[in-house]
Length: 99
Image (cartoon, rainbow, N blue to C red; front, side, top):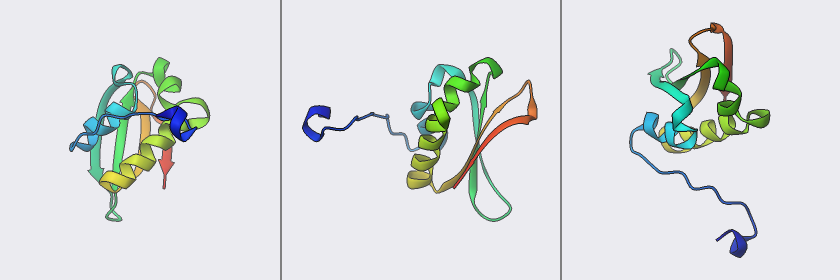
């Protein structure tokens, strides 16, 4: 298929569960937990818990994996905010991707 369209194609297994869908987009082995919640402004957010040592791999070079997760979560589940956090650092070491 990549040869036909002359572009890189990446497949992601779809799930009706937004947490499972996000886990499928990222490396599932590196994700500890995903929480979907409603924000005060009426939008939804996803908080992705990862091990501090694996956080860079989950976020990806220049935040590409995090941005991909945000774009697809917004498209399919109207989740406008994706945060990647590590429990060891708490809120101090948080990657926040807002859209």
